[in-house]
Image (cartoon, rainbow, N blue to C red; front, side, top):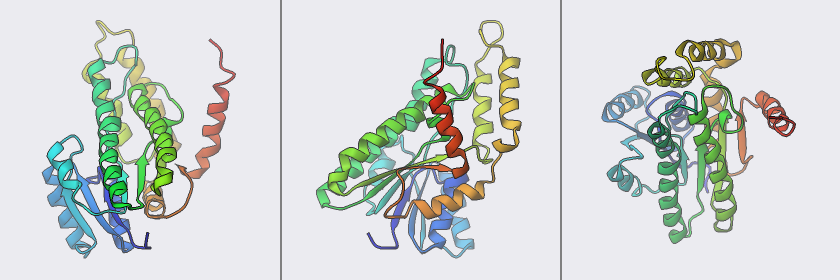
Length: 270
């Protein structure tokens, strides 16, 4: 691969992926920013024009659950697929409606895997060496109270990424994972609201006030509102690279605590 890449990003209509799309375009890469809904297309195209990035930042509607959007995306000749699109469902796993868990898996796991499979098939047929980058989460490696449905999707994504790295290495296709910490993009705060549309104190085991207190404590912590610029800068650097670590915890200062948490699980008792 050359130094300047053609990169398709899913879920680039807001937050860290939008920032990364702009940053990579500024760095000279050709970025195709896939966004979920039409209003995001207009907004990001306008922003690209205002920043003078029209030549490097192309914006396309790409809802990864929409087969027509996916078919259109497969026409793009890309070097890197940055699979970022995802949603978050929170709430106690002992009670969360199972259809919400299925929906979270559909967006965070099944649809991304299906898109990856299609691009892999295309690349192998072309004998092209590509790269796949998944946005996982710190919560793909550890768990915290209340975010079980989302955590489950990201833990599964970690396994898929590890398997794909082994399977695709002989074909020259690289696989990498990004594990963002608690950056203040609004995603975690929005996810924390999701269970209160179904949690009912008359029927639920976990009470609304108890879950609210748990979330308030987690989200109010100073280290729970990290500056998004840190992750955006890391994405701009890591995603286009030809080499690097398979798993990338951002910020790196959290890596030690993640390893400590995983080690503690072996001495945990029931």
